[in-house]
Image (tube, rainbow, N blue to C red; front, side, top):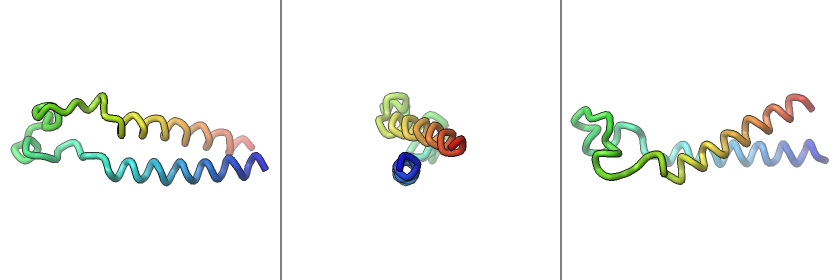
Length: 74
């Protein structure tokens, strides 16, 4: 029963992580990226380090790796 629960959480986590990765803004998008600026997101006032989508993706990735390790040991 525990294994089934962990597998369900693992699959839900993987789908949530895929969705978050797909909706994140790419590194070189926007007006600054069109002119070759590598810092297009910070030029126009967006701080990427405080982006909640990036934080959520990091947390989901950590949960994904932990569950993957636990399920492989089981």
